Amino acid sequence: MVPEIDKYTYRILWSDEDKEFVGLCAEFQSLSWLASSPEKALKGIRAVVKDCVADMKENKEDLPVPISIRKYSGKFMVRVPAEVHRHLAIEAAESGVSLNRIASAKLAH
Image (cartoon, helix red, strand yellow):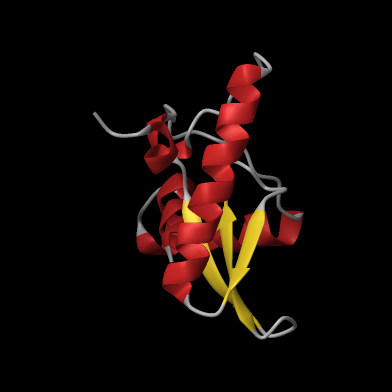
């Protein structure tokens, strides 16, 4: 069985301000860990998340659902300026595809 904290989304970035690597967890945006190497940053943020999850369980708080197991419909709405909408509609018409296909292709990049 996969440990609960392994299902969360981790990211390691270089912090020029701190001159260290920072470990982050998308589901726990208030948590971070600074370290001298990417490996240590990942190990540190995972430890912080583990402690946070244990504390939340002890206090009977709801845990965030890991992004990796959330269900997505594939639909979302986005508002754009009218001129962008027009430009995309023209591009779709000239390409012989739907506006949805053009927008999806651009978002995939």
